Image (cartoon, rainbow, N blue to C red; front, top):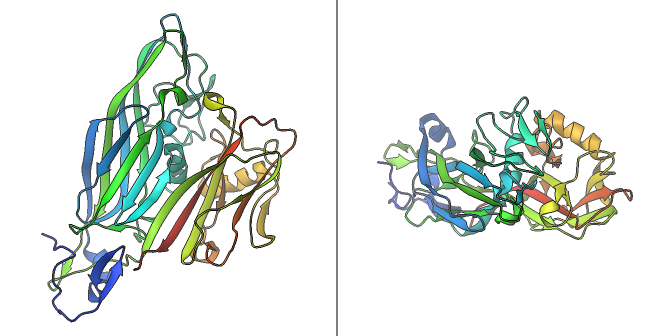
Length: 396
């Protein structure tokens, strides 16, 4: 068995370092030995009927190994019985079925706090993802690019469909909760091999009204199981001493919704700045419309004027001509058109050269997202939902 992190080291006088709130003997930090000897593990942590729309499931992860990420799956059915009424879907369906994934670990609350759709977009920003040729229904038609869907996924019913038909339709949805920023170097992974560790994933679900609006006596019922699997790496033992990689970092993905949006330049102050934080990417959607009628603003030159980020008094390192220019550059960066269906735009600092381009959130005071919406765009209850992906020190 792999020894616990609380085991007495061979040299009782050895200094310790504190990573992620856990004391680790300094000589145990040996990335070279760790990567040579570790073994990847996959475990099923949770497989139960989901709590229900408007409710939440809480999954406490097992205390073992080093956790790199979670694979979350919803497997079930959506049943539509119209009677004499009508039923539709909003643009929150299907991936914002999960209103928020919230991950806490070793006293760090909300390391991840983002909706299902935002995490799907983050997955698409990784080099090993492509949704090209995967056909799904959006509105009144079918699209084969920009859905953020895997071919093995089933939406059951389309997104933003005005009139559903009677039937029982299979649903298969997946999300990756990336605890480590990169599964190769494991930056941001969580040390879990100790009884004092506490790592919990809360899965909060949207209300039915935000997914399946109905009229009359129509009924839409969603049933299924929530399945959570972990990707972990074993902790090797070398000469009687366990060895671990560099665990000096935490990885964070946090979503924020700003409703103070109007035509013209919107300067949105990025929350949570501080020393030791590096901003990897800042991505966002504009939403327009009230309640269930809200839709993502299409990422084009009509809906978005110049897009930039800013800090200090008026330092503006990067400006994109308009939403279409930014979308085109993002597509080249990610090999996926994130703006085609869901209207995502992204300030990317890590995909090309992370150590060169990331933004030091301790040095860039008053960091802001600047999004221009032209005066011709008619806004109704607008909002910008943005996500900041950050890597930061996990030391004591």
